[in-house]
Amino acid sequence: MHSYSLKGLIRYAKKLRIFLLDLLFPKECLGCLKEGTYLCDVCYNDIQLNTVQSCPVCNKNNFLGSFCKNCSTEASLSGILVASDYKNKLLSKVIKSYKYKFVRELKDPLGSLLIDFSRNLIETRKNNYFWHSSEKRLINDFQNVLIIPVPLHKKRLRWRGFNQSEDLANIFSSKLKLEINTNQLKRHKFKKPQTSLGREERFKNIKNSFTWDGKPLENKNIILIDDVSTSTATLCECSKVLKANGAKQILGLVLAHG
Image (cartoon, rainbow, N blue to C red; front, side):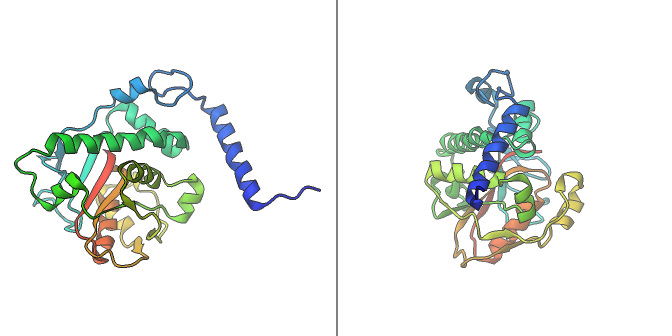
């Protein structure tokens, strides 16, 4: 009678999952149906990066995705940088396939999207006369920066098998050689999904769902990474906890605002 270790069974389960995904969702580009990849280089380059940022609430254009004075309900979050547009049908399809069809291979092009966006942001604005505020310096030279992904509750993590925000944060931090912390911002409350809720309901639903289980952040600048921001509720709630534990400037960085 064969005996199998737990690690062996986990490896087998992962291989079986990949086999079933390939069977149900053949590897072809989500844009042009080219075989062998889920997103070919041509279609990747067709996803336009944002060159203008705006207030996350009223969408008024500004320099760095900052909240307008009238829209700022959460002082702990400086702003949210948005890489692209969720109205882009291909990007929306890629994100949904990654999150809900569990095509984890898509983390690589999506992570590259955040990197390309950030590099473009730095390159196009580094000589701007207004590049003086602490938030702009944070992005310009990444001084004293810590990358933190928005965490999933352990139940959601077991269901999906991975945290998409952590995948993106790992790629982003590795490529740009930035410090990352993936396990001390914790989501300790399991709530119903935010997708079915209105803006006010989202803030109520997510309230007090996060804790910081680590040493004080001691004036660290934080880039808080998530895949998509809709109401800003999740990023605001996370930033509140980080600020209470000593963080200095906190900027959200997401693929899209949807």
